[in-house]
Image 1 (cartoon, rainbow over the protein chains, first blue to last red):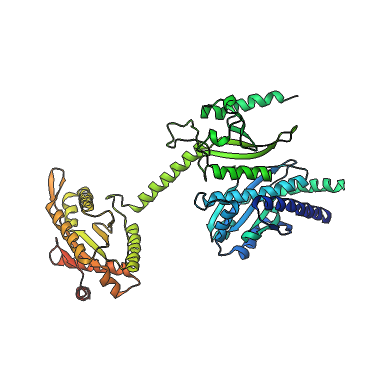
Image 2 (image 1 turned 120 degrees about the vertical axis):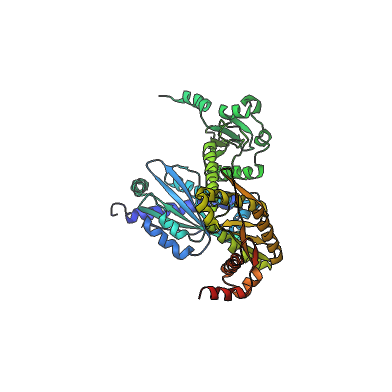
Length: 204
Length: 328
């Protein structure tokens, strides 16, 4: 745990890079989606992956939720997984946002489409800040329209014990639609990330 | 080592489709994987618009996706699980697969030509037909297992647990829409003696034949189940008591008129039938209506046996008192 935790400098640096990446992403998304996109300055922290279900409990308990995962690989051993959580009361809002007719597209396709747009846009920006580039796996629906998803989440074997959690909230004003993104980076990759951050810091 | 020589043979022999589009979605390049399957020549289609070449492709949706790749400069994906295919292409599983077109996974990647800075979208297409076929087979097996789980192995009618479950569904529906609903309970007369005299295999043959005969007298919507050993039950939706009694009488007559053949012998059989209906049951106890229906039909059946078998009795409230007399 100790060798994985960030120094204060590394942490500030990562926070700053993520902020910049989010700025880039919200600008691109706003132009593509024709709406103002507000991305809250995220909280970042190293967490025990086993604690994540408990965190979601308060926030999403009893709601119809969907969870979509998207994996990514970068150079220098950097890799991870993003998880997007949606409350599905606003499925029709997502359809309108993407310019889809409700009928022609399945809800599953709509969710994977919006997820890959939201995550890859942000991650591309982050990769740019880290002087890296990411390749992505196709998005995967872990579950959809499930109000007992917390228990499923507890059974979901994450590939890692320790994770870098970055909570990002996408709020789109015209559509009052929001979702949460969690960026999970496994322990080995956190070590790589620290090296990369040190490299970035050395350049200043 | 210079590896420029690698690109061409790789694109030639790659076991995935590559389609390169410019900003106007015109074909810049298609690799042989696609050319051969679509029966087109690269030099003849270069510069043509994608949707004129593949008029069946989902234009509105795909255009929006390609726009997102170009404007966000980030990849987009399409999975066979959500959309079986983007382009109608044949696949190489003619025997094992019933679907006509190749199931496809597609990656849409933003690319920039380094010297001119011109932007392109590259579609990488993978054949997912095997996965599609496996999943279809799995769904089919699941369906078959579900059927097996609902049916009685010997007679092929519904098994008790599924029949009872469906009775509850019908009871709720009848209550909600105020439709009539009736229940038949019947039992093969002197079945134990038949088993003793001719053996259990004869008994099985009789059960199968009677189930087949009665099944042929029912409507599609009637729910016919095996309740116990030689006891069967039929739920008759949208059927008032009079109609149910008629059905029951027909069953009684037809069974009595039919002899089951077993090892060159004709086995005479008959059934006794008890009938109950939703009105009388719901007036007693609205909550456990299904159970009440079963209990009333069972009481009527018992009375039919006591009256001498091979007959139909419908439930009447005094039957409860007669039960109390018999079983003090």
